[in-house]
Length: 504
Ligand SMILES: Nc1ncnc2c1ncn2[C@@H]1O[C@H](COP(=O)(O)OP(=O)(O)OP(=O)(O)O)[C@@H](O)[C@H]1O
Ligand SMILES: [Mg+2]
Image (cartoon, rainbow, N blue to C red):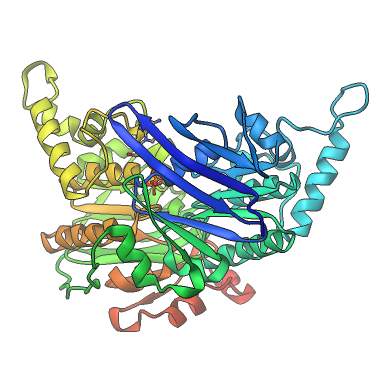
């Protein structure tokens, strides 16, 4: 079998960072080749070189044996290389059909846009994928999972030779992952060459034939997936034996947060829950169950229609997140690029941000306590192993997982008591995950309370002390520590019956 795509001796340097060194890989038709490695190992950089978004410092990319001399990303697309980036590239104000055919719209012979054909072609792909989406829908209102599906529909519509997926499942729940994998299998059957980046090792045997392991910009190993176990992969990724995570016993203390009958028209209804000091409470459910919306309302980012929120027994009415922060509550949002970080600011400035109101007051003329910012961000850079040459690096230049680590640092450093984490380990590698769980445990052991929204079932089972399961905007049930299991969560997370809807 001849490889369709080859990368040969690729190196890439950014100022102060060797992102890739001497990478050579052959990619075969009808196969899915996984790229795995810790945050900042260089996976996305290689993909951007394949997509002609970055020029390599050294080396070359070959498509069907010929050196690619692409000048722009569009040349790569035209040659049959379709890439779904780690961060979604959907234009929110355009419709699904417009997004799918952006830059390659079907046209009449006189050059005018053939909107009818564009919309019906788009709809055909959506229907074929069995997505319940209308090609006319404007993308702004879609959920993260739906956006991801639109990206995939866009790729399928191009009938590309090579399809690259950079962490497509990090914001999807199991059900959506199943339908994504179905699409991947179909593309493989059609002899497409697939490249797949993930931090979820369990996915490899499900869809990948080969995998290349990256560590610090180097390719350290290549395996046939069927010949290798997860432990070997993780160990060669990290470069050492990784111990198993053992969940510590937590004892719940006084109640810190109580939410009663919170309702937001059209989003969620009659949501009641509490979180105590010393415990990690998780919200499970399918993507779109309304968990993010509940947390945003609790944090004052949106307004609930009715219901009450209590902090340490006192009723609060947050009209703005700054009020929640002033009451020592933090929210690490799901969408790191939009609401989590200032991408054009440094790690130091981002970590300092939620602390400004507290630290500035102590100084005349409200000066920012730069020394505190420096020391703290440096401390967390080390603790969470943020891969950056120093804390002055702009967050926009960090790898996806490292951006996530900065968000976590910012809240852990903010001295909050109640910390809401929305999909906190999205895009975080296995090793850093373990470090992060340890920090979460320390946070609650020191008297804090964590409310964690997660679509990652193994994660919930591993770290939660108590679980609420949401479905279609209502809390379907609560599971005590002893009751937490995959079966119990799945049976509660399934769609709400009509009787239950009436009751609510
Ligand atoms: N535009 C850029 N400018 C400067 N440094 C960059 C740039 N893009 C990437 N880097 C650096 O290159 C290294 C590799 O980053 P890359 O995004 O390829 O990692 P990754 O393996 O995809 O990680 P993750 O799993 O977190 O997504 C990182 O140290 C990152 O900070
Ligand atoms: Mg990446």
